[in-house]
Length: 341
Image 1 (cartoon, rainbow, N blue to C red):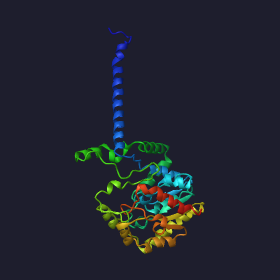
Image 2 (cartoon, helix red, strand yellow; image 1 turned 180 degrees about the vertical axis):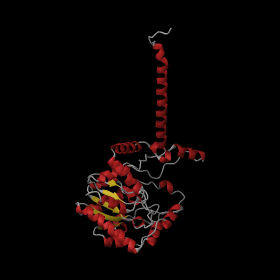
Image 3 (cartoon, one colour; image 1 turned 90 degrees about the vertical axis):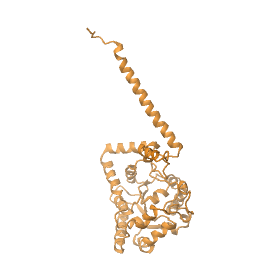
Image 4 (cartoon, rainbow, N blue to C red; image 1 turned 135 degrees about the vertical axis):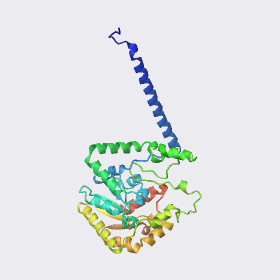
């Protein structure tokens, strides 16, 4: 008959199982640390979760400067350099790939808490795209922000997701197990570091150095090949004269709502060069698009092509500045924007 009194030997298997789990967890942690070290050594930067847009949008309601528009301004404005030159809080970077100015500016105008300075990247290629293809991800980002505002649990999850992804390169999509396995199966070794990675402040610097080998390229002309060229020629649909007038009217109305709350808006078009610039000018002639915008709004407008301080930068793909130029470009732009108060 078994004694009702438990023997210490009965707990030995449990203790051994606990040690096994400790060892397993230690090995898993060591594996992640080793993989992180390998990725960092090969130049992989952390890639922040896209949900960082919700955090930036929430900051836009706190009186900080706000930036809206496309990837062209997102890659060009180094927000650390902005703060160094201007002081004050870090701007809320709301620009995104293919981002048209109108829906984001109207969203800010409808928020009575937004009453500060707003810089609008009014690139004609996206601002006056009548196809609806520009800013395809805008509704998703705005829906995420709506949940972020309404749900404390979603806010906590968003901050945790952004915080973790900002610290760990292994969270980058390019370093995902499926991407690594696919690269190894093709005999290409480990994946190469991506050209760009989203930072926690939503600045997306682009490193073009690895793309220059074997290219017929000059800093003045930029280069465009394959899908880049097709995209520039075929993406979207240029708005008609009536469509342009309607878009300008809505931009003006949105900016006026911000002005009535004590804020200010500046419309900007960023630099481009080479074949990309020629294609954009052919599809969206300055006289029919940008000049009409400049004449149709009662706010300050800046065309980078007209400002000596903002020309001469290398736009390697014809559209975006290299990360090495972003800080200088940002400081010059800040000086243009605020030198007269």
